[in-house]
Length: 137
Image (tube, rainbow, N blue to C red; front, side, top):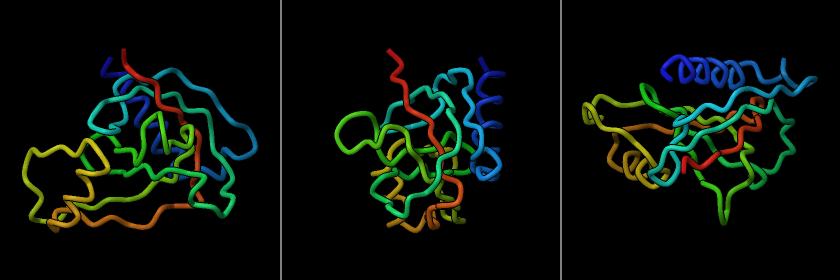
């Protein structure tokens, strides 16, 4: 289980840093369970490959790359979810971030930002990718 999560993290990080290299040939990977937080729940996912950015942020959701934990999705399956089309968005923790605290939703991330615990960067439109969320039930 831990090996699958490590593999999933490595694949996701490769996509977010080198998405243009994947643009010509979308890939499919194994389902990675318990990988992305959305609305306080852990979701599984499957990496489908990179996507071209169409210039419309509303066609994508942000995937917040919080250090030392699973990424946090802006949206979960349901109303307002864009089917797993993501723009990776960097998050930096500040010196005041509470030790051991986990962020598990976009609302918690916005709260942490308002408290000065994190700084949220701009979405990386050059690294858009498709990675749908799979409920764990």
